[in-house]
Image (cartoon, rainbow, N blue to C red; front, side, top):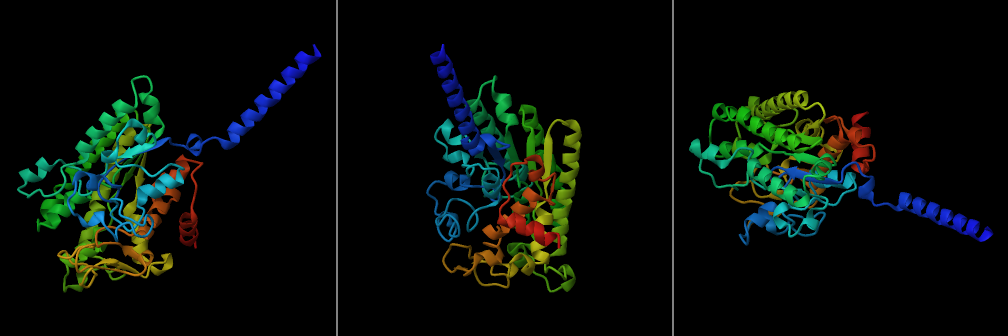
Length: 392
């Protein structure tokens, strides 16, 4: 009897210790709010799909100085280091999101997949062909990326667990739409014409969000467009002798920023409509425009020596010339990328992306902020710095 009682006590003790061990040392992902991230978009979110899609074509993005700051090598990211999706993954305790086109088996996508492709548009290329625009960019539009996601979802799950996978994942839909305007703007199409594209672009984004929610998505982050009037490439192409064109505080081109604001206004209205249609889903608007404008208004306050010059580029008033791209012969790189907002004249530096990611993760440039929807989110130094400086 005593022996049996002793055995029971020992078993109870071992079980209790095991439970404590599992509680303390369980994997980070198990304790996280989201088990995986699925992302869609263009070069602002791409982590390698563009390079996978072009094979051995010698694009500048496949060589240094791209990737020099964090990875020490080019990874297919259009920056010197990490981009916004990387900082979101880090804050959620998840690995960097792998590019879909680099996947080899289901295990590769255990923590999610990134479908974004550099140069991608929200609208299918047939839209631009009908407008008489010569399509020279990737064919992997948002619709194609959604098709990839459906294929992967079928491989990752069956009908019995598909709902669990969808509800436990974070979906980042964008940024997308910028290239729908970049391509025609840089082909000298008129502002009046391109403004007519905006409702169609927003409708395409809304349709993708609606489809994801119908498939079971419960939490979606939908970024707006950046202020293109502050982008060195646009500042170079649309230079003007008329001082009234420029914002006196930032030096950005006002009419181009007003265009970005128009896109974001319609996108916010579309998200409001979708929230009413799907009250069970959390749709977060990520205000990339508002967050990044802080850099352009107060660069020195946030550690940037310059906000309108490209770190990697060539001759010109904004260190940017369309004929000499970053990473090509004749280009040069600044000594301290972390003090520049623009990396290559079109994309941001890791430092600027980190700043914007912080504003979305911790607020106030997301409604709601990700930290509100995920109590276990880990705030890094940049997020704490951003919060403290903006509260001064």
